[in-house]
Amino acid sequence: MSFLIAVYVNEGIVLAGDRRTTYTNTQKVGGETIQRIGVHTTNSTDKIFLCPNGAGIYTCGDSTLLGKPITGFIQELIRTRIGKDCRVKDMPKMIIDFFNGLPVVPNTRFVVAGYDPSGSGKQQLLYRVVVKNKSVEMIDTTNQGATWDGEILTLTRLIQNVAVKNGNGYTDLPAEDILWGYFTLQDAVDFARYAVETTIKTMHFKNVIETVGGSVDILVITPDETKWLQKEELK
Image 1 (spheres, helix red, strand yellow):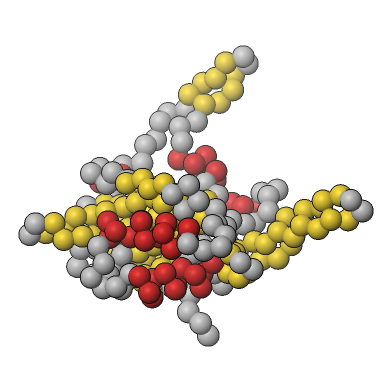
Image 2: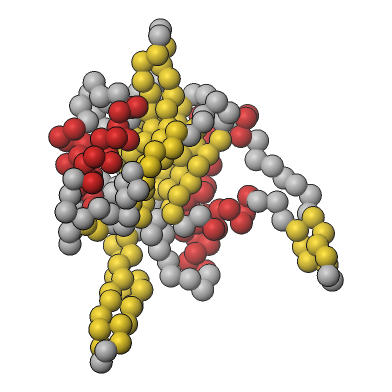
């Protein structure tokens, strides 16, 4: 599994995520199906991709396809279909068409982020794409905020308002909202990094399979440029 997040503010969009892939082994033994979860992991999986048109893509869900890592298929999609003049608004359909044209359609989700020309300026665009059911959701970025995917329970628990059980009832703790509307681009970077690192570290100490881990990749997209702030490179 994975944890990936997109934080969108007036200045730009930040994509961040981990690099761990966890594999499960399923075997039939004596007529029984035995599933061994998390029998193998790798911390070298690209989940965030920079496209020639300055857009960014992140992915979570099925990480293998036709017996190979899905990363290579995503790179092929970008290399063959997404040129420097490609509109961001056209990318969700390109992703759906590409993966539905393969012999097996993966249960994989994507987020597409970037800017398209609009009048004399540029329009911030953010989409969630599910290739298996061919669904596209345009995320409203009018108000600053964030969306995250994958192993979301850790972060969701941390930022939701909490009530403490008191006998047969509950007592609400004081609400402490995140001030998304005041985020600068640096705040967006800091929150994205915090969200991924906190998920990794929290899962490390809990009685769960550590499906989120490895180093953290961070991609920043603005109307003027797209750049990596953190990116694990081949050595």
